[in-house]
Image: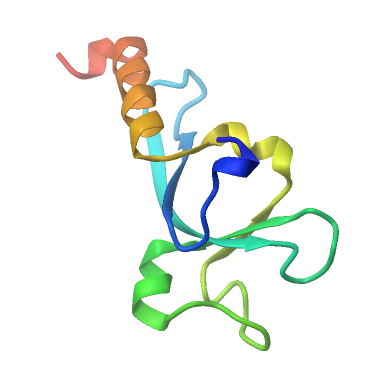
Length: 102
């Protein structure tokens, strides 16, 4: 994702892998909360979709860990996807891990 494409309140996905061979993907669903919420260092804030809908939006005075908040720098946005980009990533993952999908 590009920083300028992020929209507050929209859903995004973060990917990682369970294995070192990068064949078994792990996908997290998050809601974008905004930038520089606790300072002016350029940090981006996302909240786990589960906590967002179960506990409400995280805000000042609430425990970030309890509310599933993820804080990241802009250089990690390469692992954040919207629906269209996630679909493309899943196709690439499927090709890379084809032996698990047969």
